[in-house]
Amino acid sequence: MPHPRPARTAALLASVALLASATAACGDAGGLKGAGATPTAVSPEKLWPDLPAASSPAFDIDEVNIEVVKGVDVPGDDIHRVDPVEVVRREIAAHPGDYDGSKAPYRETSRRMADCDESGAERRPCPVLRPYYRDLTGDGRDELALGFRQLPGELTAVRVYTVAKHRLVQVMGWEDAVSAVELAGRSVIIRSPSEVAGYEYRLQWTWDQDQKAMLLTHDEMVRTEGRAHPPRPASTASRTSNASPDPSTASRTSKASPDPSASGR
Image 1 (cartoon, rainbow, N blue to C red):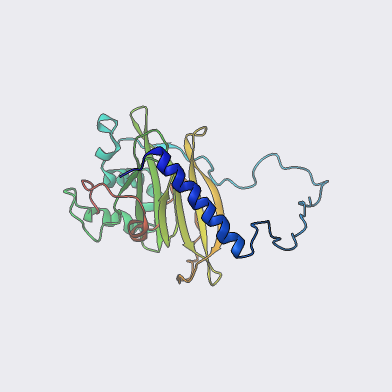
Image 2: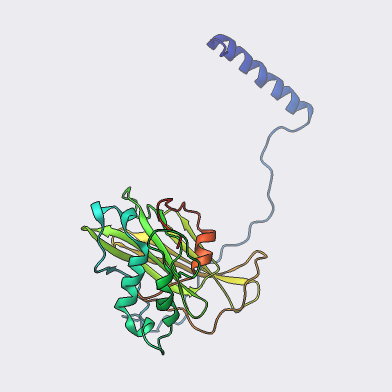
């Protein structure tokens, strides 16, 4: 039961007096203490000041990755009602050189799409991973985070889709050997094994309101904190709208909650 204001004030004053006497008894006047010598600040040193500044990027890494997904309806502009399997099928159809034919690098992915159960039951051979939904743009509506395996091989494709002007739009794409995928705030974080023992790659994409896309805002090598990873595959990651990361790891490590009505195929 709360005390009346005068009683609370008296109790507070008594506590302050008791604390002051206890501090004095301990011989500590409460003054500031030195923390030791402070390292001297060193300003950055600019190298080669006469080097001409570059006017254009040397490599195209698709910093802004926006692509309308043709042929996929978004009923009521509700991304939860979009079929993830159909989204992957549309991507496969749009890139026959990667998925169709005996020499296509991901021909097994295309073949195993027949194992994706339209009823929503989980079918292990299906390369499409469980979809996750999270508001990554800050507009109060969910985006779709989708992954599927690039087979044969160890690559996983990671995609993020939003709804714009009643259309499904891909706003992020990446493929790589993947150790973990996380959703944090407005960001997608992908961890991949490194050739250097004890380290891994950590790549982070964050929604940019001006570009209306998820931009690669962090690309770094970090310690694995005791996690062991297999050697990185010889194939290199591609920063293209056709990219795709690892599915099983994405569904295990994502911190977002899957839509219970959506299938984990």
